[in-house]
Length: 382
Image (cartoon, rainbow, N blue to C red; front, side, top):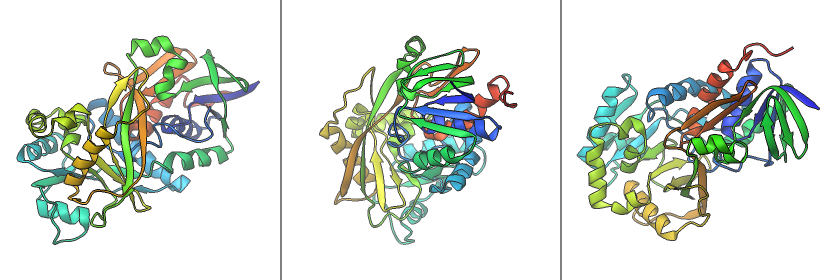
């Protein structure tokens, strides 16, 4: 029988962050996952740690994990950039949201930009202008990673550590009281942490049902980065102000929602968050839409993609459109009532699931909190 101090079920970014946090505390760790490499939410996203966009508990977790992201990148050799993020505002109502959000944050967290400063930051050209932009903001604490390489390289680094064993091709059937039964035998641990995201119902259906857990599917695309875009930072738009709580909870956000409903109701109809994630290889991630269901349809309507790309072209002032390289469906766990499911199922089992679209943002902060809360987490078992 295979025994470890800590077993982590799930090798996405949340699971990997928990494994790393456990190993840093001196625990022996076994990571179990059915896939040979990350292929779910951890690689299908923008690679944007939207630290500034969070409020309350999520803001604390995002801030707590920021340094861990940077340290993990140095350890594993994946690309991470302290670029912040830029918001392109195309109306004074959007600027009002940014101003209110600025006042709600610590000094320097949000730097309001004139149209000229915004265009210079995004294009690198002091004479450039983004058509339609009336201003914007720099979210100074936000981070960028490449989602295609961050989780896989972190997994490789952890697997090479003497105290960590990564077992792939392992399908977990039951977890309880420190015992994990799988198709590859039985594993035991002093404590088991379950980080399976939207697949949580397969192991703990009652917990998932109580939380109202569903799947959220996203339409996303990869394109060649337009020649005039020279920043590595994420770029957010007016619909982003309706998705991230630090903006969406501001009094002025209602005016932006009304504005979008009048001028582009199709964006609200697909749950759009039109934003961009430049990658170091010269490509840019464009997304996204949001559809919710217990089991989401795997097929991507072209009409949704057309809505997103039309808005994307307007935001980046790209009238010729984009050279699309790939399209895919993103997916993550979602719950309206419990966006963070951290539950002690029994004395030796903890579920840690991010049931909203900020897993990349809070993974490391959540891992630190989870390990601190587990009995004997600061002292490896004998």
